[in-house]
Image: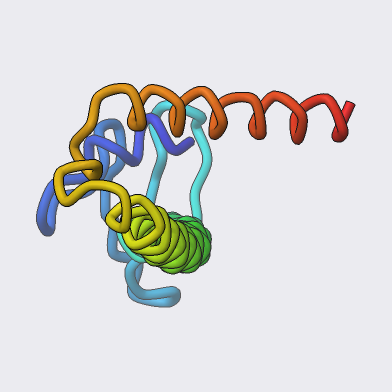
Length: 137
């Protein structure tokens, strides 16, 4: 039925339909495809079906939009947490670098940039990370 109704364009009757007038009944409609008659205008039927389809589509679209909003909010929260964690790590690293520099600055004014000290700090940091990883296993 919907496939035949799909050809209902503008104010036209669907393909195979005819409007007939009877003085005692008034207007009625003949479906030559199924050889049936009805009092209800098939265009009204089609408009009602279209309305239901649009309502269903809008409902699905609204649900999808709501789900996307929730996903966006979760991602936004995760981003904020990651940025906060980054700032904390960055601040901790700066604090550690400052304290190491001040300890080393007693021995030499250029020790902050001494490659041997930097290598030792990297090795120490990496070994600490490995120990933490092993502790979690």
